[in-house]
Length: 359
Ligand code: NAD
Ligand code: DAU
Image (cartoon, rainbow, N blue to C red; front, side, top):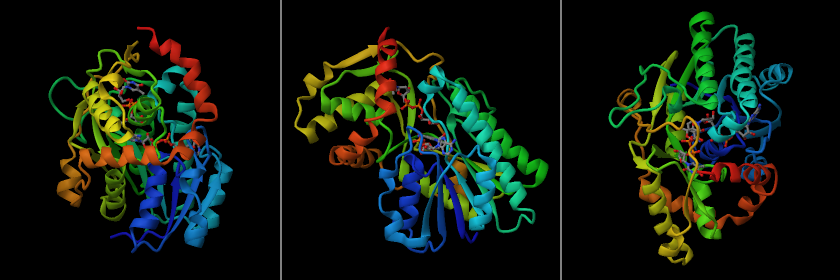
């Protein structure tokens, strides 16, 4: 069992990163270490997701505003805080944006990961009691047909600029282990959902559009399949790997919970309508089939038997419970939603919506 003391969390103001920080500080009483959250606060980063943690947890939580591509800044953080663990969430994460503008994906996801690896290699000359954990995605494996699931040995076959940039970063992380002996672990997870997710992604976008009576844009025929896992279950898996994962190894994480997009949307319509007092049949009338995402992966499914078998991780939150919690959270946190939608996000959605709707 590793003793984690000074954890550099990158991208801790984003969806999964902020949930990870909340979990450690509020849900893991035995955690006595310190979290240093390094985030550039891009359009997807939101300090409102971490309000008052510094006040509540004192020196156990520190925020550092900066870019993971800035080598001098990252080196200084390793020194200032004596970092022994890196949990690397920071990334450009939205597939549609990577199609419209791939460059920042290469900068942050490839060059940013490279910069962090170099800083860790430089700071951790001894290599004892340190760990670099890289957060990645099932999208690196490509697209599945009607059967089968991605395992840790499935060859990489990324098909969007986003997944190609994540695949590159995974390869760099592995290469630093094999070449320099850097102690690393890596995880590839399926689609996350839960509180604090940026409302450009399917589930929060649909929840908010249903409530606001806006069109519900379904790409292509709506029959693409994703595997959904509640964000807290993903983060518990990461926490497990940090403690007991084998150095140099990778672990798949998933929900074993496959849904066609259109079926998921009908379920969400029923749930949100019931909670918000809407007529589900009227809401169904706002479903709009739009132009498909170029290179749209048809199906993802994750075989996560390894982390279950070897590290004893299991999911705790069923899909029905997780979706209900998520809908309740978005209905209750309107000021968070208004805040995140007031800036660059709104402009991007408006600028590209027309194009995305031409079928
Ligand atoms: P997100 O877009 O919500 O958050 C990304 C965070 O990274 C933001 O806070 C942003 O400000 C920060 N960031 C971006 N560029 C940065 C830079 N150059 N320097 C410092 N900070 C920067 O993303 P997310 O959905 O929370 O995903 C987190 C990680 O998990 C990513 O690596 C993603 O590839 C991976 N992942 C996501 C999912 C999912 O379903 N969301 C599933 C599997 C894996
Ligand atoms: O699989 C893990 C990946 O899941 C992560 O690596 C990514 O960071 C994360 O964004 C997510 O990628 P997806 O492309 O699967 O998620 P998204 O929410 O964008 O889309 C889910 C599915 O819904 C996908 O088939 C596209 C479809 N979709 C999406 C949107 C936003 C629609 O039909 N309409 C929409 O408006």
